[in-house]
Structures are given as structure tokens and as C-alpha cells.
Length: 364
Image 1 (tube, rainbow, N blue to C red):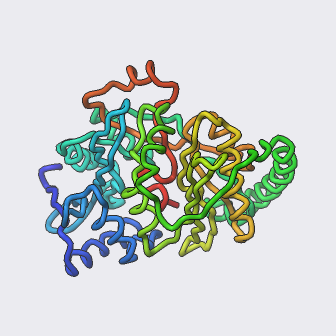
Image 2: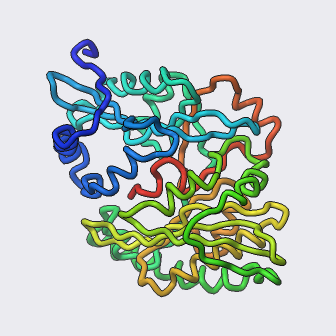
Image 3: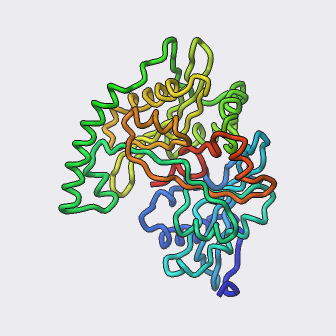
């Protein structure tokens, strides 16, 4: 069957974009934000590590029509302290009638032809199987944590109705009351001499701080001012709030959060998008940082709050701040000049993942 398909590199033009958006309407009928021009330009045409005029979009074509796509974004990916060019696969999809036809491998093979380390974060079960067939290695230690502040709209979003929704609403409401009381008793006290400053953009003078704070993780994307500002300061379709945290006048971390409203269901989420902190100050610091962000979002009439924990310390801090529901947030990577088993022997934690990784900040 694969001989009937070809891979085509997307070159942006008004006609090409119109053709691609027609495909999105078929492949993503419930995701109208993919058709937003500002988001499309930001995500596909302006990434700092992509080559000029390189959209990173590769299309699966059959009979002249788009039937699938994969987007490849370049990242500075630190592995065991060495920065590589990471080739991040996002939005791997084929039309519904072609799911299960083993066509995803054609797009994955394209990823493997680029010079760099192929990886993906936020993958579906179907795409996971396709990646694993190509010898990629699954990482399932990061978890997505959430709190359903208003159970009813959250349960409706995941498709629960009738008696199941009623029972779920009662159960979650009781759980919210109980956990709120419990977590307030267990919350870490505020760090003495900790202050917070809201910023418009990141400064290069702190690039070395973020790298040093993440030295305990074998894999993470390099947090530098250019990339952080691309992600959180230059977007015109959404607004991120960016915070610097100080302890005794010294920068000890940053946090990024935003409020998002689903354009179809109206579900309103607070997203703790990204954060890095000085590990020498331990759980007390990250718990305080999360507390500041959740408290700032408390007056926004949210339906829920979500964040990702890369290790147990961060997970414990999220739970202390009321984000107690969780599920695995998978990632996958192709070994090149490194071995995950060897990295595990040398590092306490393998992969630092937040909602700032890949395209996770935009997923619902």
C-alpha cells in the first residue's frame, strides 16, 4: 500500500495554506485553533532553530491529496550535558479512514533522516506503537496532574453524561473539599525572603542558571532566552505570564502559566506551563513556586488546573497544591550516540518534561 503514497515538504503560500487547512478540517474536526493564522505562523514558520522558510511540515500525499502530516521542530536538546539538535515530532496524524494501515512509519522514517536526535512528547497510543516499531524507546515516568475545580464541565468534556456524570460530580466535589483541607494542613510554609517578579521577557544573563538547575536530569531542552521568548513572549494568539523567583535576592527559578478557554466546549483551564528551580532548595521552593501560580489563577473562575511533574519531588509539590488527579504523560526518543539504560545508571532522573515541551501547551 505504501507505494501509493509519497512524502511532500510543505512550502507556505496562500494556496498551500488553504489546502492544508482543508486537511485539518477533516483530520481535526474538533480543533478549530489549528486554523488560527497567528498560531500557525508562530508554530510552523518562526521557530528559532528551524532554517529560514522551512515550515517543518511534511505531508503524506495520495493522488495529489493530503491524507497525513507530521511536523518536525528543532530543539536544543541536552543529553548528559551535551547539547544536540533535537528533532521533535508533533501532530503526527493520518485521516481517520487510514488509521491502522501502518502509514505512520512513512512520516517517522522522514524524521530519522534529519541530522539530530529524533524524539516526541505527548504521543497517542496509536503513534506510540508506530514509533516503537521503528525502535524508539518509550519514557513513561512523567505524569500530567490536574485538579477539577468544577467537576461538571470537566466530566462533560471527557464525555461523561447522565448518572455517571452525576456520581462523578458528587465524588469529585467531596474529594475537592477533603483534599483542600488536607493539603492546606500539609502545605510547605512560604520560604523566608522569597520574592516574585513578573517579567515581559527572559534575559540571556540567566541562561546558565537554567542549565545548572537542570543538571540532575539526563535529558531536557536547553532553556535559553531566545527559545523561552519564542515560546512565551512572542506569541500573539495566547498570553503567558512569566515570573522570576528570588531567594535572598538571588534568582532561584522561573515559572510560566496561562489561562486557556476551549473554543468549542468553553472549558477554562489554568496551565502551569513551564518552570525550572534551584534543586538545592528542594521541594519547599517548587511547592512555593506552584503555590504562587495557582494563587494568582484563583480569581480567574477556572474549571481546572493542569501541570506536568517530571519526578516525585515535583509530583509531591503539585499534590500539596491540590493537583491530585494524574495520568502518564508519555515521551519517546530514538537512541543515537547514547543509551537510555546507561543514562539511568548515571542520573537520578531521566527526562525533565513540562507543558512547555513540544506542543503540549496547545493540547486539549
